Image 1 (cartoon, rainbow, N blue to C red):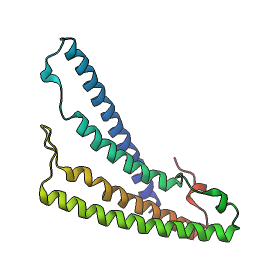
Image 2: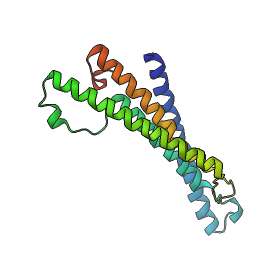
Image 3: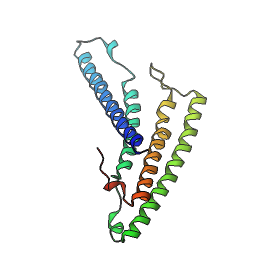
Image 4: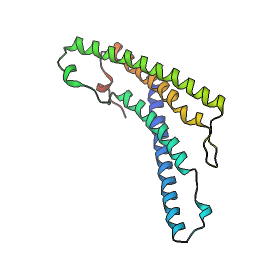
Length: 173
């Protein structure tokens, strides 16, 4: 399972990087075309009215998937001053408690995100741009990212139970 999780982690890294790169290129194009149109060097027809929409969709996906990668590495913000006062047994208990709680939170977001996606699909919610992009694509980022999040939490829990070490002590590439 560790190899599959590692592959998923790398794939998500590449997907998020590609989404950010595409977002950058689209925004540069849109800004440049706006200036070139204002100078009269280009026709207004080259201005794309859907760039902002696609960029928002991609940023939401990249951020939510990136959060899952942070969870895998245990690099999220945490309160260490109390954790460091515990002995090894107390630290293990607090890690187990935090991971079990995180599993519950991930389950909640998966379930509620699924409901939102189903409703958007049922109502055929779409953007107002020329693309008429279905909003369920945007909303699907929540349950999909938290499914990945849950997989990473379960992997961290497995490592903690089998080795007694937190993910933050494991080397990641």
